[in-house]
Image 1 (cartoon, rainbow, N blue to C red):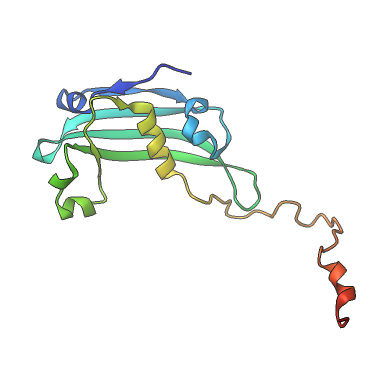
Image 2 (image 1 turned 120 degrees about the horizontal axis):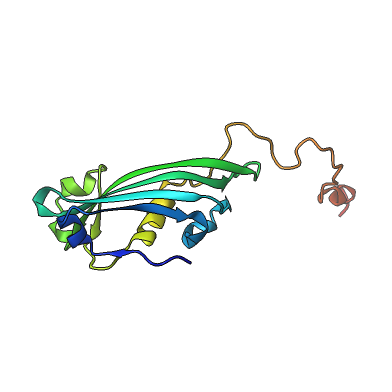
Length: 163
């Protein structure tokens, strides 16, 4: 497992710092159960800035590809990852206006002196992944193979009309 990446969200934004790199997909523990294959890498870039009302803000960018499982045929699908999230940090939820809460262009998080970057990336990936990924066209598993399976209810045929 790689070294943990931790930043102070307020200081990072105030100093307009940036951070970029690549993470092996195999190290994204909370995402692995949603994937068919854990090979490959994911690129990330985080840029800090100060937003309206002097709030710390991060722009998070994720690029790469994940192999998710088709819910119809159970084969892998290459899912392109292209996440662009604006995360604004607040000291208290009550300082948000109703307009800000309804604004879909950014998300609000509590300001943290120890923000785990990998956990943040995993959160954004989980939110980005489709809940039931499917190929546009595919067949059901074992479809058309003529297995000649017997219905478990065929035994009940002999009971009809007998009481």
